Image 1 (cartoon, one colour):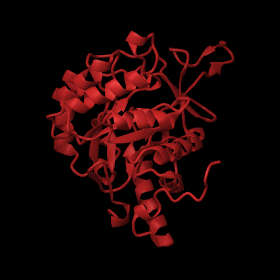
Image 2 (cartoon, helix red, strand yellow):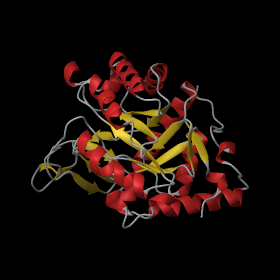
Image 3 (tube, one colour):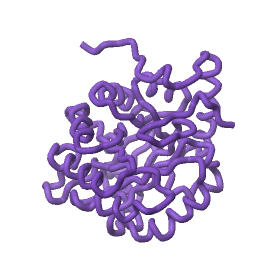
Image 4 (cartoon, helix red, strand yellow):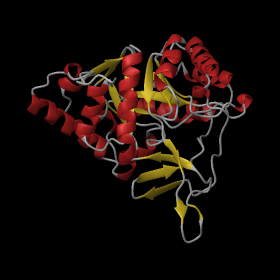
Length: 310
């Protein structure tokens, strides 16, 4: 049952609660439909969509370790044409209350805007999340988000292709994530997502080889929680845009941490992959927590951290 205390309006989108499924963990929705009641969630962020199909990294692509999970999927996806023809119509027909944000990737700055333009007439799409952590092939492989000029151009091109909200997803490895958020905001972003995974390497000590086919990968899981919460706090102080807090969430109180740090929304990734029905439980647990604490709206908590960094 929906709780009015959990309702959130962010970037002009009305979410029934702040619990989203993070990009890369929910496919395009259909993959989870038999185990997750998607319409009980605030929304989902789709798997990445690129202009052309991407085959992704060599298997194995995902591995668990004691501290969480590491993955190198390589942004594998069928490309924008197939997503538009096959996946978005399914979402439009089957997901009615949860909002859909499409995660967009590209090899060049112009590809982000091209993907957005191609998908923008789909009724399933409420907005976009730009993954600017992927490498710019024209800049020697530097992440788009790490180069202010490339970041601004990616966002402005996407902004020119749609009137729908655009969230920009930033990497925790950026030397100044607050400044990157300001650059995105100035270029037309509607919101910021923080954080993406941390780079890491897990070795099989018997074979002395990486556990992933690609070698290195993105680390996620419980250890990412304080990283994401700090990034949320920094970004929330730097820009007046709604923030999606991502990383390490497994309990309702983890969501509360993000909200206190300044997040409007949160996205669940690794924990949802391990326990697909956990996000639904988190919605109920968060509503119970708010009721017990006398919280009538999450806005009462947002950005209320009682600490001032020196």
